[in-house]
Image 1 (cartoon, helix red, strand yellow):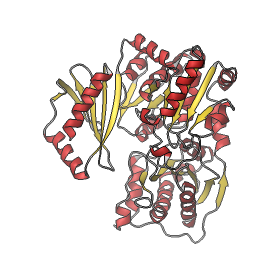
Image 2 (tube, one colour):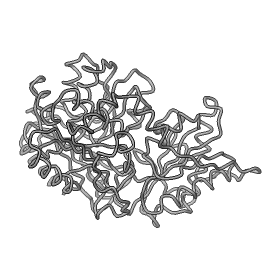
Image 3 (cartoon, one colour):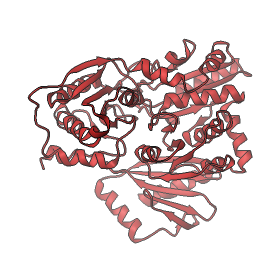
Image 4 (cartoon, one colour):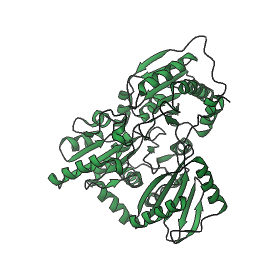
Length: 478
């Protein structure tokens, strides 16, 4: 297999690399036609189409890479609908389904730092393709796809109107708009310089106050990931608003670079990850919208999720980390909601895709209809379930892939029996190693599949215990 082909590997959601190093026009021109061919071979009998959607986010040269994808795909005989501008990744997944395409190829590196770009592959059904499909893409890279005698057609389209119209029909949009227009609810949206920019404004009107809405390929020197360390401007904005409006409802919603992950900040400037938002959304959608179905969570999800599901007699299905596993379950069973701890949440009433703008609308509907600040809503659920906890995660860079291999071998040959002074009572190896401890807290150790990074996750009764356990895990790794 040629060196270029053998070095292209798909991770939990797509292929990513540093621009100009791993991610180049040459490599993209190899991958894109192969991805289109595999989408055709996999889905043509179901779809009866030769059209591929091509979209992109706001990263450095994303529109140029998208045009290169469109040219490479049409050259091997497929028709292409190329986006006129940036849009959320879920908008392209939506377009694939709405426009009866084979799927979508989206130029994005999601939440990675600005040096990265990547390619996500979506199926005709409006969600991420399965690991089997990406393996087929990798396998075909060594031979490639021959040029067609007759190239396909290339047309442009605007992905926003159909997508936003579809979202509006999922919630009581008039009630949310009225609450914002009247000042009953103040909404701040940190779009992190990414593809969520203008999204809530299109849906809810001009009174949405966007933060970091300009295009900045360097993302302010950080990364477009909805984590507290990148949200200082949003925290400060909400604190100032609270000082002058102490009794009004306010919320900050945070979106990652391609708008498929979400987090929130409540009216007291407390950060709320999807570990908190998912239980709130389960409660809202069952109580006020009478939704039913299975709750799908990844192995790294909070213990509060099954406890809130139990309040409403909903079953739980657990998957490995990666939204494609949730999407697979959504295609196989009646699902109410599927979510992951990193911010991706999707709904059985929508496409099988995490969608941060739809999650934002449901969160806003929960606030407006309950009359509660998000922080108060969360505390109410803790009281109802009799369960409270704290959660955190750290990503630990390793010196090399060899260090990664040694640590993995150590976990396999010398199983941990005690962590941070607490006995290990169980180990779940669905994805990585999730250790349940004697006090019912848990630590999860999981390796990145594509880079020398160790991901450490912990949930315990207090934040102090969480940090003690994570410090122990970091020391173990080092």
